[in-house]
Image (cartoon, rainbow, N blue to C red; front, side, top):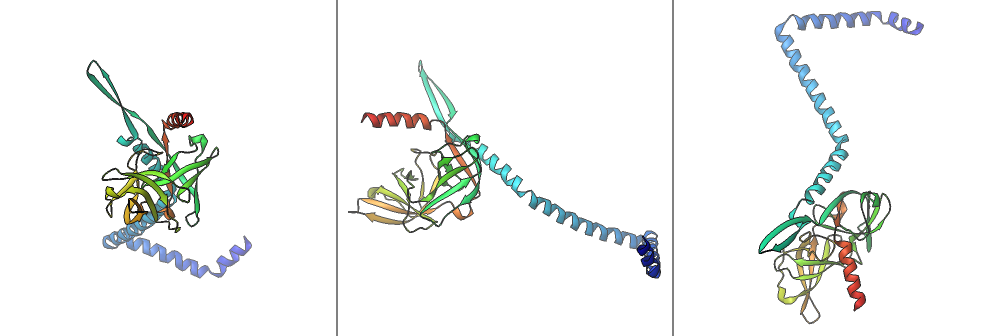
Length: 277
């Protein structure tokens, strides 16, 4: 306190000047309409700019919550698409009763680890068995196919990426529905894949889209990418089609795990059939 009093006493002239200056400025603005209007306008401009900056800061800090909310909403919307349902049609006394029942639902998850430059690439997501994730579920994002769940814990799951040496999914040409297998190439290119064993008479075209066939883990029509090159295989009866991937794996942030409600039933029946053979 003593030091403060000494400081004020030493600079009392400056503080007195400051008080008179602020008082005169206040009286000048208050009793002169033009200066008052100018002061208010300037103050509002400064305040508005400050509020805008603060709003941008809050907006930036809340981006995670916004992204999570949008991802959940997208998952719900995907579950309402026609491709997520199957038709249960019953004929009774020549009356056709058609009912749409849901086959696919989607669980949103955030990518927390991802590799793209190895021969066998994996993705870690922040959802696990507690949220309904199970092994062998398909995984997609807004752009297209991402991969397949290969390991699950209570709160995390590991996805075998499309960028993996063992990737093989049933796929088809979007125009003539010709079926083939989608695999990753051998050149470690994170932007390309291959649709292999397509019949030569299918006549695939450059730029044609390659999508899921509906025979595996995904609904029909989820993009793998677009054809960029055609390669003959063997005697020319089969084609390997080079595909530019629809998904940019280097920027992957959110994914949707596909819950096919008939997956276990289908797998069980096919396993019995294979055993009988």
